[in-house]
Length: 282
Length: 274
Image 1 (tube, rainbow over the protein chains, first blue to last red):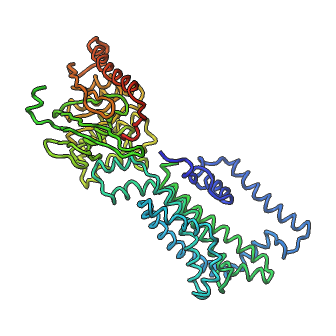
Image 2 (image 1 turned 90 degrees about the horizontal axis):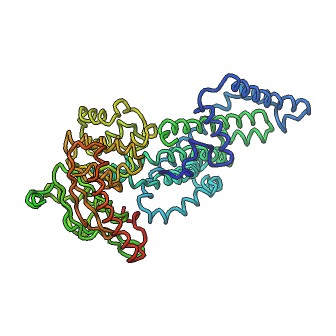
């Protein structure tokens, strides 16, 4: 019924090389093949302690200077002591991410739904969508800043441009999965085009839509932080540039840690939503 | 047979012709095909593969538009899907994101109607699916899925049930069970049934009449009465009468098919005809 290569997310790993780890980890942690045994949990904790503790020890042992690589304990301390400074910046980044991704996702979904109904229009538009997917939207940020200034606008636009096409291209794959038998079934009850869309095509596309949202949101996060690093006086990306220029490496890594956690949280959110609403395929 | 000409048929196919345009030119799937089905009758359509059986059935359901000719339901033209006609497809065709109850509700959602709960529950009980309403299709066996599809097709009480090789994917034992089930439901609440099948055994067990189609372009070549009393037992299938009837029909189909191979090098058209 469905091509197995279009539905990787909720079964196996992710699409990108760096995402395979995350989603593989997610599926075992969040979704999980049953409850883990105590010994497995202990082993996982032991490995984590060994990695973090080993890094701490090694950095001590070889006397690595803090400006090259701060110790985990120093990062943790910076995270606690400077959190009141970092938190507002996190807020800025989240505003950019949510607005940009929201706009991009809505436009991407609508475009995907409409375009796939008209194969000819799809043929014409697809190259440009591919162009948008493959072009790093960060490259446009300096230009956007020239036009829109140093506020939220250029960043939100960049995030939307980065995440929208990603959502669209995956959702379009979903909408293109036409099962003529199911459509004939709906038609045999006298279903209208709109009913066929909402009751057959959309549910059938849902798993791929979640894949698109998952990948698109991560792309949005990357672009938001990147855009903040390019210009403007606020946001986590801006903190990264400023901490590194002042060689405040523990603070720098504290921000990196927050970004990692943010990424994992977003990814997990869409993974769980996908599990809940599109698990019929897994 | 002479009665059929006087009494208005439940479902009448008149001079139905349907051609598809393919890359290698127009393809005539059925040509000047006529068939009358009386109210409350079970008619099977058999014939060599690619003879346009499915095309004919889909035209009866209103899912296919005929190139010429017409389909009449109670004397009225069928020019699109009709709530008086229920359809069972080749595979169960359950929506995998809906559980059994939601699947059976699907036609009602589309039609904007309310299901007759007592009737649906009765059907579910008859096919042995009572209590399975919360199951997802993937949690049901092939036979159960097809039974669910049968319930779904009958749930809105159509007066005609069209079945397109409904049990072709099931194993022989499950198939026999399904056939008995269909006969039982039909005897209690007679609907008019038109059934496409590749199994002559199934055709003989279920049908009042069997229409044999000629190879493409398909026409109804002959019609055989199946005179056995109902309810039919599986034992009847081992009698000489059934054996003889099977042989006659088989000869018609296979004979035609051999002549077709001798005649031309037609490409298989099973997919195109769907």
